[in-house]
Length: 212
Image 1 (cartoon, one colour):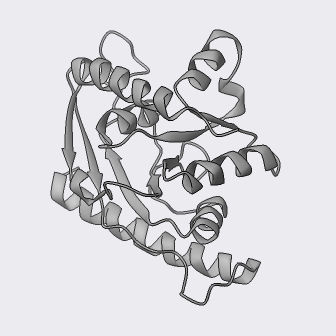
Image 2 (cartoon, one colour):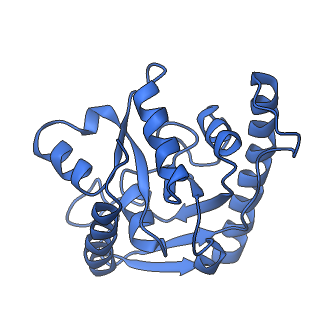
Image 3 (cartoon, one colour):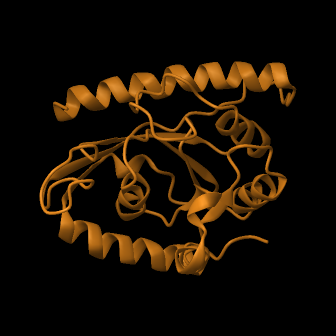
């Protein structure tokens, strides 16, 4: 079942209202996100605010792959209502894969943390999911760097200080496939290597641009 596009649009409006109030979001390069058609946003991940920050900063509503553990109780109902997709990170989750490909087939925007979990956020290790979705769907991948969200302090210590600046930098879209039309494991691994270099390069450039 394809998640609700209307719900994702409502989630984007809610995230923008809350996050632009809590922090100073500086968004650079949002015009690089194609205005229509399937797109994958590949985001570095250092803090649990990264997903909501990207939802607020993106020029289009985003359906994120979110760890299944977050879909417990009322939070799960809310996440489904705003069009987010649960995924089991510990196993091959066919339902999540089918749902994510459905988002792209319908011309939507899929958000992915390609490292799979919170890290130092430098794209040092990519799971194969990003390349798989990009190759299978043919959707362009837009690298995104979220910088400053890992700061701690203020009234709620696990969160960045209120009114702190968080930069969101969108990069140039890249096509993962090599043009041969192949979808073998070897070709997906090769696509993952190409994407890793592009994501790491974008992150370095974003840090230079923002001074982070």
